[in-house]
Length: 339
Ligand code: ADE
Ligand code: ZN
Image (cartoon, rainbow, N blue to C red; front, side):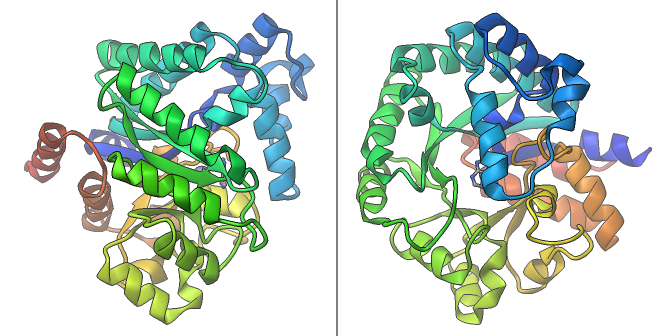
């Protein structure tokens, strides 16, 4: 069996992928045309847009990300991108995904909550019907917009009321820096957690250990987006290990955004050696020139992972996901099935 066939056949989950950042260039251009939105490089078609995915800084990346986000205007647009992500997930053997979406970015430019809820709900239903892929949502707050936190929780509650069980948790994304006050987000997360939403913030990507401590202590994180800078503080590493707080590691994202020069220089082996729980994610796949299978392939190439190591990473993702229990059991059974 080829390596790609082996990796595809594994029953995988993807726990760190942004819906807006997952939009394939050809789909983004179709939506941009439909809605009269200008995208960089658009005159050169999908290759032209792809060529614009070069980032000198995180801010630079966010500019492009927000540009692509503006292509989502109608129920159909949102439905289309969810279904297209499910198609790619199914082709790669991803059976379950927790997909991050930033509702207030869209609300702030006048898209109604009803349009967002309807697009997400119809897309999710279609993803299951056409491709058998189960998606659950993570609604994230932009860290620099803490005043949007309560409305993000309200949006999550509204989504859950329309499509029960569709919301896995709440996230925090965007620029990570010390000077953004976290109190308002912490209060909103407390309300969200009381309603049953998991706390799944980004931390330890653009900032270091102090930011991860805040995510753990003030937000009650059950997993961390990235978290790769935890190694700066051995006490923090002990805490993450003791509390079984999983790291959603996205190696290509970290390299493209300049955290590490190459995948081979990524601290992923040190995180595993420290006994931390790690799952792989693609973050914003076309923008970072990757997808989940490619992340596995690059790690195998860089770190020489055996099939057993690959299986153990897949297992951690399944175990630490918020997949419905029967689906979890089925994936674990298939992971352990001989051959
Ligand atoms: N939103 C999309 N991708 C992100 C990343 N890598 N970090 C923080 N926020 C994001
Ligand atoms: Zn992310």
